[in-house]
Structure formats: C-alpha cells, structure tokens
Length: 206
Ligand SMILES: C[S@@+](CC[C@H](N)C(=O)[O-])C[C@H]1O[C@@H](n2cnc3c(N)ncnc32)[C@H](O)[C@@H]1O
Image (tube, rainbow, N blue to C red):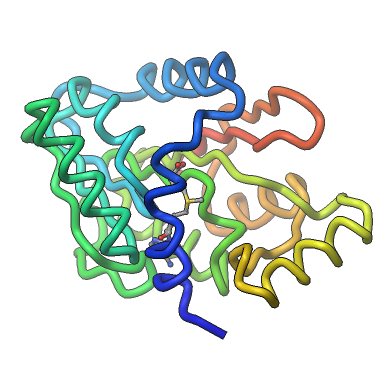
C-alpha cells in the first residue's frame, strides 16, 4: 500500500478543484477562528493541503507556518499565495509528527480535516499541546466517523484497499474531546453544523 504522501500527491489537483462541501459552515468556522486571531500571532497549520485556509487567515496574523506531507499540495498552495501576493505564509513539506519546533512556539495551531488521517492522533494532540504557548489555542475541524454504520466503515476500508481513499481512523466527537482534555486542553467551542458533518473545536492549552 502506498505512503499517505503519495496518495495526497495523486489527489492534489482534484482536491484543489473540489468546492467546499458546506460554504456557510466553512465561513462560520473561519469567523470563529478569526475571533481568536491577533495581528502579532505566530500560527502553525498542519495538513494545510492547498493552503486555502492559511491564505484566508493570513491577513489576521503575523505569520503562518503551513506544513503538509504532500509536495503536490504545497506546489498548488505556493502558486495560490504568489498570485494573491500573500507573503506571511511559509509553506513547508513536513509531517506534524516529526516537525522541528521548540515547545511553546505558537499562539495558535490549526489542523483541519486531518486528525482522522493520523496513525496516532493522541501523539499529535500532545505534540500540539507542547508546541503551543501557555494559553495558546488549537482550532480543529474533524470528521468524526466513530458512530457511522458498519457498512460505511467497510466501504471506506475497501476504498482504502484500492487506493481510492486515504487511511481513516474511526472515532466519535466524545472520544476526540476526551483526547483533547486528557492532553491538557479546555474545550471552548464545539460545533457540528449537522449530522455527519465535521466537528469544529476551539480548545485552549491550560
Ligand atoms: C483532507 S486534506 C485537508 C487539507 C486542508 N487542511 C483542508 O481542510 O482542506 C488532508 C491533508 O493532510 C495532509 N497530511 C496527511 N497526513 C499528514 C501528516 N501526518 N502531517 C502533515 N500533513 C498530513 C495531506 O497531505 C493532505 O494535504
């Protein structure tokens, strides 16, 4: 089976063309994030994909370090940044697991549509907690598939087997908030636009 980066390299162009599935919910998530952003902030986004969210939030902060494992996703992100003349986002090829950064570096960390794709989300959640300054904020929108019908889970596994879908982990919103609180986060916002939709969470490092 191929590496996750190869999967995302293969799908980068198609991903870039895909419309946001729920534009109103996306706009609300952007706004809720902007409520915590400040002009002097250092932000990390992991699994940034083609950079859409980082480039929208860039005017609200000092700098965004946007990382992703897929070179092809990053190629598209850099092209978008150049054509929009956005210079305070640095795109970098890295997995979150091995990211080289001292503890206490970031005011805000964003990770959207990514926690369910990780081999071990608890390791990453703990890493994010460490990377944040005291009182720093983790903003995440996550597909929580834990309560899906078994047939959907089987279909997702079959899609993965044939290379049509990435490897996904199945967990509920309750399990996710449990992981966050166990790592030392306080949940400030938890919002799900509708049944089966991604769960948006704003959590503060306490
Ligand atoms: C579903 S896409 C989400 C992209 C973007 N965050 C969004 O919301 O549109 C998942 C992205 O995470 C990246 N990714 C997967 N595993 C990763 C990891 N361990 N560290 C960093 N990026 C990762 C993939 O290459 C892909 O670009």
